[in-house]
Amino acid sequence: MDPLFPHAAFHLPPGVTHVCAGGETAALRSHDAAMLRYLADKSSGFPGRSAQDAQVEAARADVARLWGVQAGDIGFVSNVAEGVSIVAESLDWKPGESIAIDADEYPSVVGPIALRRDPPVRLLQARGPEPDRLVKAADASTRIIAASYVSYLTGERTDLRALRARADELGAILVVDFTQASGYLPIEASLADFAFSACYKWMLGITGVAIAYWNRTRQPAWAPASAGWYSFAPGSRGYDPTPLLRADAMRFTRGNPAHCPIYVLNSALSFLSAYDMQEVQAHVQTLTQALHDELSQRQFVLTTPRSPERHGASVCFTSPDAAGIVERLFRRGVYAWNGQGRVRVSFHGYNSLADVERTVAALAAG
Image 1 (tube, rainbow, N blue to C red):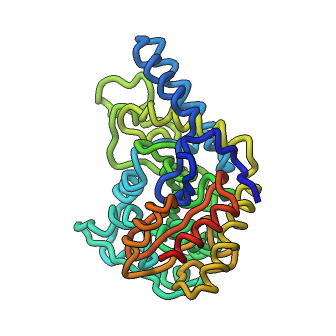
Image 2 (image 1 turned 60 degrees about the vertical axis):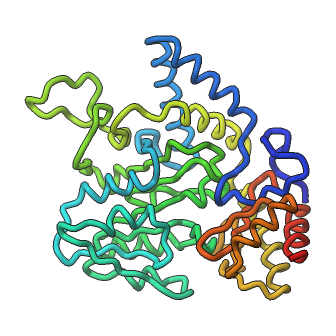
Image 3 (image 1 turned 90 degrees about the horizontal axis):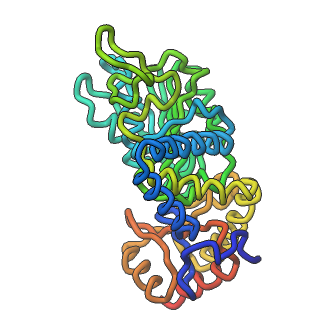
């Protein structure tokens, strides 16, 4: 099975098996020109700012197509934690209210709420391997159900439709992090009330910008509790009365959008637009299935479900020597990812079955 994406399109070192998309993907060569375009526009005075604004709107439109929503539903924040914080701060929390999460949820999804003090918010933590554990963890006190579509820790995929139904039953808000999914899985963002994604993994962008989605149909009256100059409607001046917020999801963006990462994101979105996400999903999951089978036969302690309906593009296994394993793999030219006592092998379109075979051989070498 050959790569789906051409290797020549990426900054891939010769002879390297790059299987750490869940941490950082290899960069597209087209990003070089995108950064230079940004620098040229930045140096061009007011016309350059108009060019930067056009890049922002182009990125919103392309993300909207990728996520199946309207461009006005898409805004930008600097990272997922900032976006979740803006949502959390906008709510009038009552004593005793809770957020339902998986016990192994990514900190950026939980941290902005877990440290709230006035009033404190209870954490209802779902534990165990059952697919419906988060649905069961939410109760009548739950204000937010928060979940990653695909787990950073195990590669497990969440049933978002089941969470949507439970949120509707409880009158709760569903917040979703698509970071470990967007760029290779079809995304149905409209299942969420709010959704976010970093752009430097399967989206093929870089750090500094994250996608923020506001479901204006489900939450038409939503407004942040704080703002910056960019959050206000264009042309606002003076504070009597308080200026109106932007009418769309760019109210998430408090200061200047991160223009350079957005130029790069446009480069990435242009590349991804040549591929159907179902095709990318089928490609990477062929590789994850093959690796899962190989490692299962060798008695690795896998935490990723085997069924393709229940996992994404990563295969994870636990080991007390996870850091050492990843270091030895690196010395053999296999770039995997370490953290939280597990090794994560992640595939994207530039990988092939040869990468699976080389990863297995490197692991077998000890």
